[in-house]
Every structure is written in structure tokens, then in C-alpha cells.
Length: 304
Image (spheres, rainbow, N blue to C red):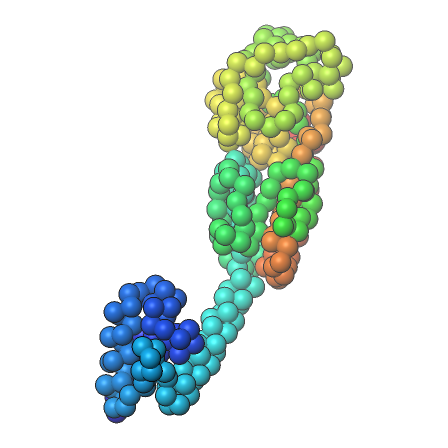
């Protein structure tokens, strides 16, 4: 007796379980003819008939039923082994979704620090502006910007965010040397750059004690990384978000001419599917991200 193919054994199990080759074909996503061929191959290898026909219906023999039960047990064991492997992978690895600007301006400059803090844990980052379904997209977690209210998720607050105007160091020096930046309203001499966050220039001017100012921005960006790069290139002034500009402030690419801070309406949250457990990898990444974002807030306030 030879060794049957796995495909023929699957055809047998599906046919015995579902009662017809038509339903077995649907379950296996193959044609009915393919199921019939696989059953015939199995009977040829085993040297015995596995079905009898009664009134146009296939009736499995006792041997077929026993073999189908064995196949079903083996499939269960295989699925469990694969699940154990997958659980082990996710325990020591993490797939995280976040906004492209956050991945570019916050995470990328800190990769070495993160790797040292999370030794043994591999992080896979998916940068997307879409509010993804964690389960459907195969993501373990996501860093989201908002109020922590998303359906079917467990959200853990990581950090608040603060805003303050920032300009390039070269533009700041030029304006400062010309005595052109004496008070917050002087920023109206510059092109005002904005993104799609809900905090606006009018809010900041009010915070700075000048509520009558309703400025008209001259350029809109739907990506904060592009907004910040335009600012670094000297094309105007933007409301720097503490998480995204802390590194550029620290490295001298940006300067905050007026240290008037405004707390953003939204904050950062680490979310996971509510039905999924918080793995060790998730917990350790959460601790590191919370600490790193806290340090960024300190840098922002000390340099702005």
C-alpha cells in the first residue's frame, strides 16, 4: 500500500462530513470533478472502496468513516501546532500601524533606542492614514490620534500633545536679526502652513493673548511630515506638534520663536483588538512608547 496524498485525504474528510461531493467541493474551493478524482485516487492507493451508492447518494463505509475521523483529528492537531507557533511569534513580535508622519518624524529617528529597549522583540511598522480594522489587516496594535474612542478596541493612553509655532533656524535668524519677531502677531508676516489636525492658528493666537486675530493660512498639507519639511526648508511657519517636532528642535533644524504652548484636542493612544490579549510584546512596546513620548514633551517644553 502506498501513502495517500494529503489532498485526497482532505477530499475524503469533507465528503464524509458534508455528505456529498458537491458540498465537499464548495468547502475545498475546487470542482466536484476534482473531488471525485481524488476519492478514486485514494481508493486506488488503499486498494478498497470507501463509498457505496444508495439511491444516488454516496454512503461512506465504516473504514471511510474511521479514516475521515483520523484525518479530522490530524487536522485539529496541525491547526493547534500552527496556532502555538503563531502565538509564539506574536508574543515576541508586534505589528503596529501608525500614521506616516508619526512613523517618519517620531519613530524612525528613535529606532536604535527602541531596539535597545525592546531586545528580543521585533517590531513591524505599517504606515497608513487609513483607520484600519486591526483584525482584518492582521495588525497586533495601532498608535492612533484621537480621544481613545474606537469601537471593538481596547485603548491605552500614551501621551497628550502640545503645539507651538516653529520656523527653520535660518528663517528665525534672519527675522530675529532684523527685529521682525517681537510679538506673536509678527508671525502674520510669514506664510502660515497648516495640516488637517483640528487645532488651528486662531486657537493659538487666542492662547497667546490676541483673540481678535483670524489668520488665513496660505498652504495646506494632508501629511504632517510634509508640513514639517516645508517648514524646515524655510517656506513658512507651522504649529509644531510636540511629538513630531521634538527631534527637529533638539537637532536645531527648527526653532520656536514664542514659547506659548497650547494643549492639542487629541492625544496618542495604543490600541489593540478588544478580543485579543495584551501580549508581552504589546506591554513592553506600550511602556517604551509612553516613556519616549513623555521625554519628547519635556524636550519640546525645554527648547521651545
